[in-house]
Image (tube, rainbow, N blue to C red):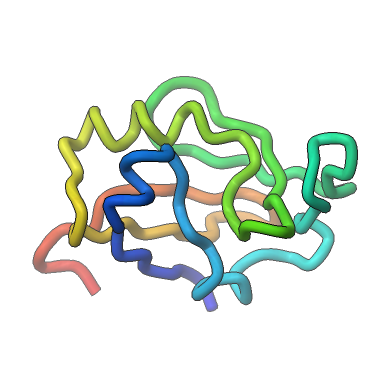
Length: 107
């Protein structure tokens, strides 16, 4: 799997996160951490979203979301995303990912 598509819910928008459950095969097992920052994964992911510098984060194991998520709200606002829109998470390197809105003609 090289990319996954996530359909946004109102919960995503309200809480500045992306549900990764349906695309977990995209990520190495070593990037999944525990329930708290104290139990973060041994391998961080480099996430590029166009909101600024890349984010280094793991995946919160209990929720299956990127643990660092302040950037997600900025990403939603920058692209004026709403519930029902889709986001692409593309693996561009071993631990590197690009997150961007899905355009109508893509995929």
